[in-house]
Length: 265
Image (cartoon, rainbow, N blue to C red; front, side, top):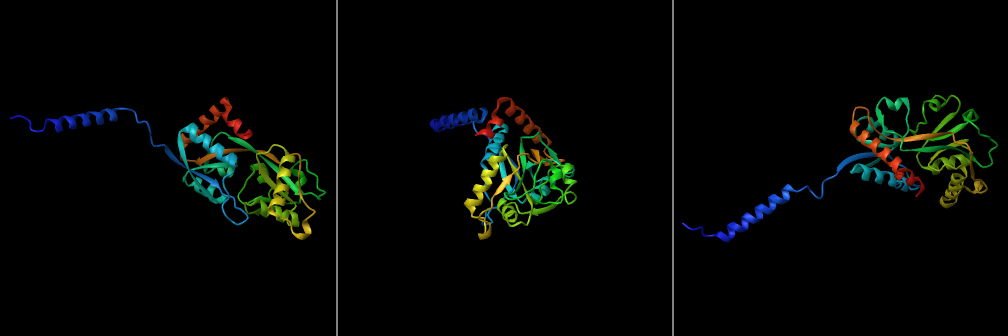
């Protein structure tokens, strides 16, 4: 008996063949691996979470491209970032090392280094050439920040720690009012004068001075407290292969110059 619907049969065969052909080709678009990335939040004057700093956005974008992944950025207060990384929630970025943190976290190679600057009110008679000059001073530090074991040992021994909110404005107000002697500021800027100008401009733009403080500004000592290497991190028992890929991307970026170029642009 002859086939009644040869046209339909042949059309179906062609569609099936085309579909099989496409299935055998490499996919032109693939779903990228999504990795949670935990960042410490900072707050604006209104208490809202401040945008990620542009220089950090560039770094995040570099690693997404270099590793062919997509980061799911999650912002928390710094102590919670540290706690959640230790529990294995995801990667962290922007943390320095300490022996306490090494108990719960694994670290990548350093991505870059921050300078930790010593800032005082501009009428202060204090001189600074090393940590011994902080003897007896009250020092404002963002709550949860650590600067390595050596300095940690001196907290509330050599100097008194005033832990504060992550807003720079909060510590500046306390510094201007005399509620702390010194504030420490992490910055990518390698020159004290550049940071000093930036902070004094910030005082003006945000109108942070009270009526009795209008003649005051801040000064930044020429020698940083330390140069602080900054890393990606993960829980100590998690994501070892991801940290290895991050290290490979760091090495490639250094060799090509792509990573150092991010600090200049």
